[in-house]
Image (tube, rainbow, N blue to C red; front, side, top):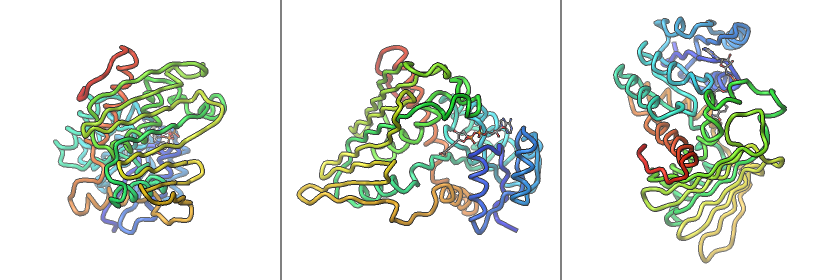
Length: 332
Ligand SMILES: NC(=O)c1ccc[n+]([C@@H]2O[C@H](COP(=O)([O-])OP(=O)(O)OC[C@H]3O[C@@H](n4cnc5c(N)ncnc54)[C@H](O)[C@@H]3O)[C@@H](O)[C@H]2O)c1
């Protein structure tokens, strides 16, 4: 019997990807899956040799489930996590942890009350370009990082109406800073620490099929003195995802599309790394392995709820700042 028996709540694209990744882990198995769309749940259950549910509360009632993966649309993360904690299941929750700080707190409190682990799926940290940058920064050769800027822009969610309807509504997905940029915000915090204030400007210029800003500029001041700058949105016809990490003894530029990292340490020649030639554990498998190990060893998960909360707080602060035209001080 595997040490960690998992239930999957929501069998959409990400849920299926997470569940399939569990197959690569020696000590864990997905034993049940749930989706309100029965055919989706049954198809994935068949593939994984798991039981199939359409009501997640029934899945939470199973005694042979130790932990759940919450991979539902963003608006349901809080409700499902709290219910899972109340049912004494450990929780791996996809990003964004929730759509506001109050819900994040409720999730953390529910897990603490029940003595279960809570980990948030901030997988970008574990993707090759970003693991490469982290290794460089942590080598010490670059000195202290003081600036992370990222531009992640593109067009619509594929063709009009191609994605699930929840992604087009702020109330359900939170907008781009929640649905997409929790990753970039998390990575800035990974390198620069916690934030102290946020200033943002946003607007809706091109897209008529969403009810949130399609262009966002976010400036973040960090407690240790660094600055983060995020340009993001869905208003561009040309997709682009790149950025720059400045340190006091060197600089690191990245192009995530081309999987290239270029760096220069002060006084040395520039170096370009083709990240595709480097070997990494797949990010989704790594985060789930860490989650399962934390359960087995009874340790704090690698990315606990407190981290997800800080990322959500920055997105919430940015929206507040843009709406009121002022600097938003943290904590909110
Ligand atoms: N870490 C990443 O890089 C990454 C990538 C993509 C998506 N995500 C996150 O994963 C989550 C899911 O995204 P997705 O792309 O799989 O969305 P999706 O729309 O493909 O899937 C969502 C699924 O949830 C199901 N669902 C809705 N309500 C439910 C309920 N009450 N009970 C059970 N199932 C229910 C839907 O039927 C659907 O199958 C989102 O939070 C998203 O932000 C993370």
